Length: 218
Image (cartoon, rainbow, N blue to C red):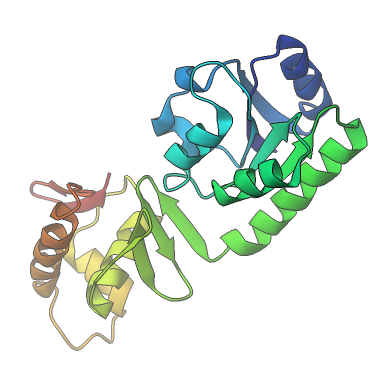
């Protein structure tokens, strides 16, 4: 089941969409973009976002959150002019659905984006502000790539894949290099020191030291 967030200031629309989707998905609704906790957005697999709302409108909200979330954002809009549609896509939206919409169209659009996301996400790992491209072996914070060495990247990926688990230097070394590694487990501490220095430039510190045991991605 996918987790879907629907933001629309019309109560009837929220009830309608929830009734349509909740058989196959977990649906959370909100009548105001300003009441949504931005720190929770990474838990959703898709966001449906009304454009015309009091307070922060949909376009502004999309621009605000686009660098924080990787899931598809679909706009709900009563506007049908080409210029309005183009603006919604430029702001970071992946698609749009015009009101009034048909039930089958809504379901088809959502399912299509979820299928596409599932195909693409096998190579992406999201951890809060961090996005790992597992194919290219790169880490991004927002849209900015963090310059890591090969060893630094592999250590980060290993810890991030096992978020919350504590590993000793020896376990990290074996997990990254295997038992045939030609270096020494003590090098892990130096690598992590360098990683922390690079992440601190972004004001972030995702790797915690668990004294007497090792390290974990928090």
